[in-house]
Length: 593
Image (cartoon, rainbow, N blue to C red; front, side, top):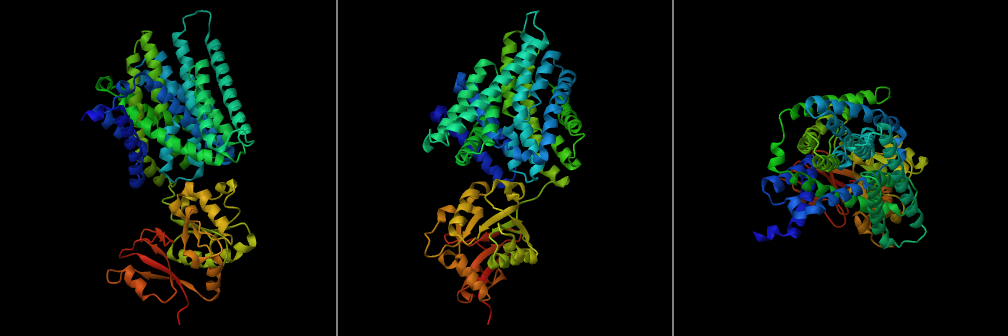
């Protein structure tokens, strides 16, 4: 088993465990962060295969910090100011009111509950105002709770992360500074000025890259690497000037880039999202793997009181006080008041300051690291495994997206939408023409007027509500473009275009193709005029899909398989779904004679 001692094997194992845990979470609906945490505990303190301090040595801290920097930048890229249209006041109150209230309550909980000395309690209370995009993002990805509460939690997690770090920097300076001529006000001014300089650096770098990229000063193949290096360089530069201000730099840089109208960043954003998933997977394997039995033995029973106060008093009171005068519905307030998992930033910052304070001989420092790990584990498990149940109880859970979005209003899409609605499938027909949407509206179908590729559309349509999107406009090229643009968000298995005719090359790589060359939109509309209809036929033990196929009238097209749980599986030019007893076969064929 000597090969296990190879660092390359361990790096590969970290990636395998992290991505594997996320895949299992996707398949089972369990919280990904909790599964990654369990995998890290097994690989670390349980089996001893991965010991980050031994395997990576002095590289461990910079690896984690740079990963956090890229994750925060990726989080900033997801913060578009358009999202604040309905949630801006709540986000503002959670920052302006929630941070000081949470800091005060967290300090009291650490002092009275965990028994920490007051200076350390204030330091730890400041760190605990963070919720962390490293855990909020994967948690929200597994939920379908609607746009507003998800946006509030996302904005709070990303914005409060650097604020919590700066609070810790302020308290650390207060604890360690020995000069009598410097007051708390002087320290606060120093931290504020350093924060402002870091924010200006981030904004400056963002404007620089968004000015260079569209003007062709950087070739396409270098844009992603240049952006990544700029993020890392800005983080390191700010961190060298003043500890932990690099988090402010990368967060501001991400927000500015996200709100600058630069076409090139559509593909770059996807690259950063993929990189963010990889980094979150790696960090949350390394994070619990750093635990050892000595650290775990340092956990004291009195810490349980602190955890209870943090979960059931500090967070709920902080949110309720912050949102007291907002118009946010009570069910959304209660949900936000419960969800506050802590992640890698909390542990990384706590470990950094604990090490420095231990060297200075500050009493009680040895309790910080086990307490921070306890907070991360307790909040991830408590919030990760209860979020979906609570959302369902509060009426926020929208359930699995079982709708179908038909892009292009015409006779065929109206016929398909009407048929699916009779089966109980929610259907929305989208088109840019109000006149074209009138037949769909008269048929009782939900309609949306607007360009499906317009970013403003996302303010009106929840793509997570749909299990399939079918592009059926008159232009095969536009159909392919729709699938290309929305495929990364919905999944390429969930987007499809109507079959192309013989005058256009097949575009299979831009979405699944339904009906093949015989199913161009012109051919389907012609068949619709001839009286073709959608029909359903149950699949039984006696009559399988193969039997039904043999008995179908000539020319009939296989459209989809409808599952008892509401899932639809469409037949494509290059694949056919399987059918079992209890399923329903949907066909499209000529009128019965």
